[in-house]
Each structure stands twice: as structure tokens, then as C-alpha cells.
Length: 331
Image (cartoon, rainbow, N blue to C red; front, side, top):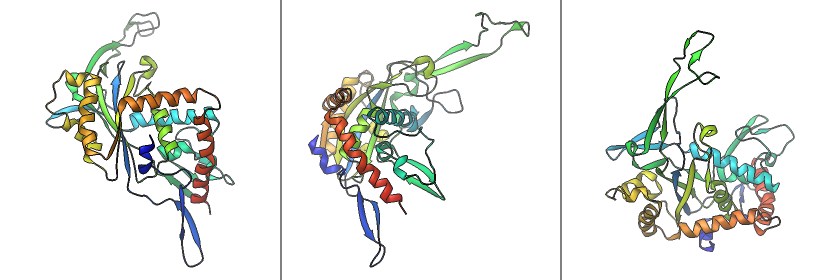
């Protein structure tokens, strides 16, 4: 993964100093530079999966004269940001506060709340009379189904039965009319998503943290108390360039797959091959999905070994990241 260093930040140089006037200076995050890294993934439903808003139907969007399943970024970012906090807690290098409940009290330092997870996924907190915003180092795209919606969704009819298993309500002396339909994405459905970092703001340890947080599988969307783990993640590849490319949009990736055989779009291996062949031609540097997944598995193995090089890398990065936030937001 050394080839990626050209497109990533150095953990030892996360801040820069600029002059306010001839005498005064201030500390701020290092200025952005040309560099973009895209992690392209396929999300495979391995159990009934529910992505919805207020309506009971699965969220979708019209594209290329058809309708596709659409999961907005936070459907995946929220669980993976939470997993990132758990990783830092396990190593004792962060994750001190609950997700989306970041609070700083008078006398605390910004680094008492902000950590490596903040650098990767972003956050904000009220601090005395200020709001401290941290832009995410990694942007999540929408996730779009590879096939039109009607190939990917189904529904089931349910009733809310009484405790004894019948529809008879002893209090009202009549059968329950609490009937409803559950819409879900069918197991085996595939969705493409792109996770991108731009401007050389993410250090290598941040990329490792992202790969660990994405993991291999997890529980996403609604009703996961019923389905449990319902999404398996496959990596198509890592693609880097100085400039952003249109192919970093999942909508453009769907366009690239236009004309592919329907059966090919149902198989992980073929989809990865089709996308990789297109993406590698458009980027200066690429790492194929199998190699990224091998690196990901090695990171997980290292994480499970106390005193590993990975654990030491996290601990060495902690003061550097803390210094970034304390210097940036310090008075």
C-alpha cells in the first residue's frame, strides 16, 4: 500500500502555521493538496434489508429511464462510524463519547471529545460560546442497486397478533385489524457505493481505520433487531489520482454497467471484474479488491493481537491527532 502515500497526508504533519500579521500566527489544519482516493465497494444483502424513510416502501431514485434502490449515505456511515468508536475504545485511544452526543464542558480540551474517528468521519460539538465543526475526511456516496428496483425488492404481509398467538383481542372482544405490509430488499441484491477522501487530508492510519470500520459485514438499515447482520461488504478496489473522476459517483458506475448481461450483475466476481476493468483505466493508481480485502483481513488479525504494530500505530497517532484539534480550536 506504499503507492498510496502520494495521495494521503502524513500523520506527523496534520497542521500548518499561518501569519495573521507581521507578529501573530495561528495554527490550522494543513492546507489541502491534489490527491483523491476512492474505495469502491459492493454491498450485498445477506438477509432482508430495509432502507426507508417515512413511507413503508424502500427508498429509490429514477436514473437512466428506470428506478433503482437508493440507500442514502448515512444508512452505511452511521453504523460504520459507530464501529470506529468501538475500535478506538477497545484500544484505549478514543471513543470517549457516545455517537452524535459530543459535548465539551468548560475547561475541557477539544481532544477530550475529538479523536481519529472524528478525523475520518467528521463531527461537531458546542464548546463554550462556539460550535466546533470538523469536516469528514471521508465522504460516503449514495448506494445504488445494480439492477432496477423491481428485481431487488419484495414484500410480506403481517399482522400484530396477541400474546397467545391469536388475532383475538380479549379486551375489545374482536379480532385485531392491525395488519401491515413490510417491504424489504431481497437477499442477494447488490448495491454499489464509493467512499472517497480528497485533498490529502487523511493519513494512512485513517485509511486503516476506515477499512476496519467498514469491516466484512454488519447490520444496516431498519428492523435489524429482527434480521441481525444483513449486509456483506465486498471491495472492488482502491483507486487514486490527483484529480477527481466522474466514475467516483455510483450513478456513473451504473451507467458504465449499462448493457451488461442481467445475470452478470447478480454475481459478485463478475461485477467486480466489470467495474475494475473500467476504473483502473481512469486512475493513475489502483489496488485490486482481492488485495485490499487481504490487507483488511490482516488489519483485523493484527487488531486481535495485543501489542501489534497496528495497535502501536494507533497509539502513536493519538497525540498527533489530539494536537491537531487542540491547536486548531485552541484560543
